[in-house]
Length: 259
Ligand code: OOG
Ligand code: MG
Image (tube, rainbow, N blue to C red; front, side):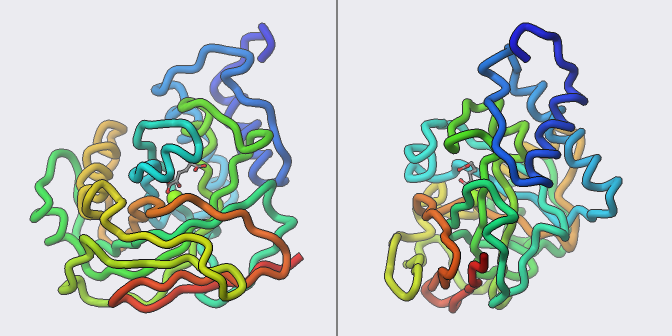
């Protein structure tokens, strides 16, 4: 950076170290031109480092699929990231605030797949591949200073993914297109909204996920979790906080924040 030519592998190491050690870094795009393609290559290399440490891929997250999220971070294109087993927090579990730079939480809908999906699929085809749906919370943590980034930065940083919690799975016989939801911190609602905020219907996020991974030679696998993207703006986490999301017809999902 800063005029020095930095390889994509080196950027991946910087992004991975920042996530692993919970320290803030300057935006890559402050010092260099980084294309979206480069950024996804950095993300893949960074996740390869996690795989080398024994982390297992369990799914994919979609990001910036709602207006509220786009407005909050000032980026207006859909993005995606990779989920690993190490990112999953047990429902009702406790995270350590110190393991993150400046974590936020957002209410999401999770899909569990029973069949692979890739490329151009219809909403009906996407739904036919869904085994179950559940309310979910995503813990996002940009590794960039002040949570500020441009599109290539956030992609290189695995689209801010750092943790996720999934509530009780249920059969997908409920139309998830317009479910009321609330995000509560210490019992107080801090965000309210609807799953309709996610591209008009969260299944569109699953359709987009299948298309986007295929551009990178991947497919969504049976057994994977796909997070549809935050339905509301994200809320900052603080030590001692109890976090819960309630979703109409799907119940709730929660976790606690420790020191
Ligand atoms: C980028 C990640 C966006 C979502 O659900 O929209 C995201 C960020 O907000 O840092 O996870
Ligand atoms: Mg999210």
